[in-house]
Amino acid sequence: MDLLIENAEQIVTCHTRGRKFKAGKHQSEIGLLKKSSILVENGKISWVGKKLPRGILRKNLLKIDARGKCVLPGFIDSHTHSVFAGDRADEYSMRIKGSTYEEIAASGGGIRSTVKAVRKASKKELKDLAGRRILTSMCFGVTTIEAKSGYGLSAAAEIKMLEVISELRKELPVDIYATFLGAHAFPDEKTREDYIDEIMFRMIPAITEKKLAVFIDAFCEKNYFSVNETKGIFLQGVKYGLTPKLHTNQFYSIGGIKAAIECGAISVDHLEVMKPSDVSALKDSGTIACLLPAVSYFLDIPYAPARKLIESKIPVALATDFNPGSAMSENIQLTMSLAVQLLKMNIEETFNAVTINAAAALGVSDRIGSIETGKQGDLLIFDTPAYSDILYHFGVNQLWKVIKRGRVIC
Ligand SMILES: [Zn+2]
Image (cartoon, rainbow, N blue to C red; front, side, top):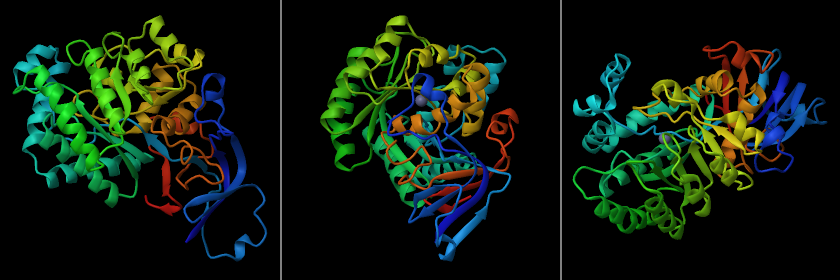
């Protein structure tokens, strides 16, 4: 059935006016409409405005009265590690008591423990866990999500993770985009060279043949993958049709951003540590800067220089980076709250960062991320008359309805 959302107090359209993303001062423009309505036909937005088109009410429509409420585009979480097994609560407890990373690793914690748990888990176990987490994300307003592999670190286990994502995509009401992150860390049982060979010549061909991922990612950082290793892996991925995204500049600036842009990366993610040369490399590149403030909060590390990036006209997206080690929260509204308070982004920049710019970080801003005619009917209705209340009244989920392709899903 088609859907009419009537008399919303505010509609935050995040309109694009044909742009792929919003940068600089445009990142503050949210295209606010007051006391307006939205019509969704065949899953797509067919009309937005004040005075209903003639004859519309004679149609068989599901009508939602949004008086006193505000409507936004569905949120897009463009960076998550939602598929994992095991938990690292003990590690968290040790960390807040002051244990060092080395002590935690020695006691069996860290990414190694997640890899062990993922290898041991059956596909069904992984799927049940990830499915529940993605539904939690949805309850906070996420209608499109990205999910990565990267806790398998062997061809079989990486493929198992990506198959879980592929099955969930068919079963859950949200859109899910898969990223192959074999280059997340090095497995204990292989040499560095052997593992990179396995990624390039075994995993990439197998994963692309089965169409299990659209993006390829790596952790380009001191003690992880070097700039040259990252480039080699990315170029091989591109050859097989994958689009690069990169974890980079979390702890050190080693040249990951420039390398990612050279390989055609759609986004560079983290960016807590930025040299002036990193900012100039990003400028005018069209690559989205995806910031993950929940990681800085959870690990107590510096926050990304969001203001510097926005002032340099670089499009900024925000994502949760939901994962068991460094950001154990599916709540994208918490990420938004941290962005306002700690990245010093204004409320409007923050909304564009989880809608249109996040859509651009997944290469789908022509279809989702704003409330405009022809776009997918992915909408959120909040039980508050003003969009600013969503962040002002922090820590409370005021979401009233989640709508995916014109259908109420939550
Ligand atoms: Zn991540």
